[in-house]
Amino acid sequence: MQRYLLRRLVSLASSLLVASLVIFAVIEIVPGDPASYMLGLNAEPETVAALRDQLGLNQTPPVRYLGWIAGMAQGDFGLSYTYKVPVSELIGQRLAVSLPLALYALMLTAIIAFPAGMIAAARRGKLADGAVMGATQLGIALPNFWFAMLLVLVFALHWQVLPAGGFPGWDQGVTAGLKALTLPAFALALPQAAILARVLRSALIETLGQDYIRTARAKGLSEGQTILRHALRNAMIPVMTILGMQFSFLIAGAIIIENVFYLPGLGRLIFQAITQRDLIVVESVVMILVFAVILVTFLVDLAYAAIDPRLRTRA
Image (cartoon, rainbow, N blue to C red):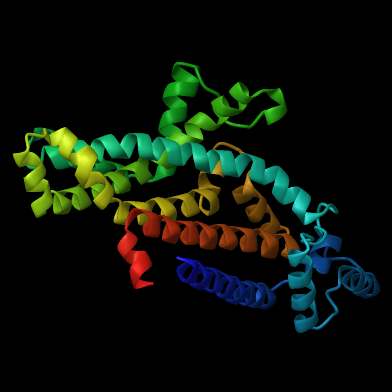
């Protein structure tokens, strides 16, 4: 197990290094000068040059890259060109919205998908299976921002039980914060639950055809007991893969939903930073998101080893 863990850690570190090089290179080739953007079209060349020197933009790319990496290793992401505050402070403020939203949406995804997938697998070829598959097909086909607008029309405008957008801040209480995140979380969770339910159904159907499942049935276990006690754990490998990918998407890919509901999360921050040419914010936020994706993948690999001991033996 130690060798398996060590190899995963080396892979994680290598992926982060390659990702940082790619992110920095892509940002470098993006057209536009942050100093010129900040000062406007009529700025004097001397003023632009002075601001470039102040921001460190006159240094060579390798020097800027090494300084950026060294700062991140110490928890210093630099100073925002636009907001004039540390980037780490901006990320911390926005992460306080995006991370709870992602966890809330992932919890709703599991609550919806697991019962639906197990019912569809247990009733394969019957009416319940057809209903679940039809609903999941609809959930995959329709975009989440359409779900978001529909939820706003029903729950915010018609019934007026949940806010239509904005975020009051956690200092106003956990209840107020969760109410503000409920509609965005459902809008994110419904399409993801449809995908997860279909994957779980397929994995369970394959598992239910194994010999040990027939033995469990022969012992008198009901279909539900057979699925919960024996089939579900062995069907979890593909499900864990999808859950890991979905959590990464919910953190990094919620920019549309955050704009629909006007949430001050990481998605809106990176969108604003791109439009304002705040390169240091773009680089740092993208690097944080890449780290989150790689870390989740690493944790999923460890979950594989915990679920299936054969993977530890092979490693």
